[in-house]
Image (cartoon, rainbow, N blue to C red; front, side, top):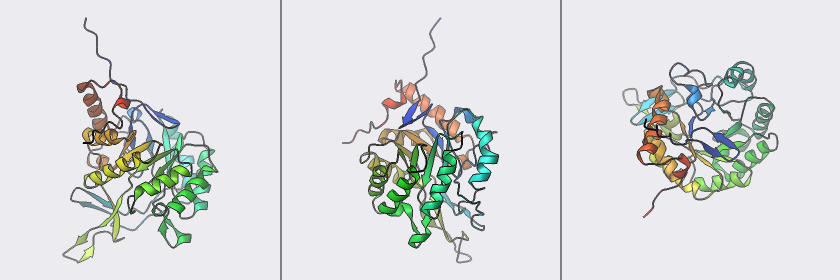
Length: 310
């Protein structure tokens, strides 16, 4: 009887974290981890990153707050969430039973809010890491996003590291002149890993009414349209930092995910694709495995950072 060929090894390390495969959900696109249970075999994922959490519950922005665009989607949800206390009480107990790493994405408008939220989650069993959303406006600095200034980005990273022992992933905004400067600043401040990119600021206009489609006027652009930008930024950051990088932005297919792996990302997060195809994560995972088998690659880690530049 012929032997069945062994499947490629898909496990990856993100500093202190180990994932059984490099596929993660992107915060804000997969709810609190269970909303897609009827469409996705959640246990097959590498990790779940839950919807962003703040110290107090948030209602978010008034509608309309989502708009489809050519090649993507604009959203101005406004970080609506149940708040960290309700998450711990109502959502996390279910997530603990899924048998895979759960990562909490957190944000705040002041450094102290980040610290309070991180400290509470750090004392709560069932989480393997925190992802720090630094695209939020620092109200003490006139609304400038933490992630747009290397000094502020480093400060919030260091202050969160002071209050928790959980591994810290810092999620970078692309709405800056040079993302590598921010990446180096948060690495120096103690980040264990980076994830990038967050959405790109954009807008859309209803020409019949001559009014914005979004009530908030501007929103975050995600989807296939931003993939080339995200890929370029990941490649740049990988070549400037020594900590692991997670690639995000417009990943719709296995080929998209593999591009990020080849330029140096150790894992990827999938977001908008799940709105278009709820089973996208499973399709991407099986497609990545098929690629490795077709090319005789026995371990996904052999592919990381193998870009052949002229």
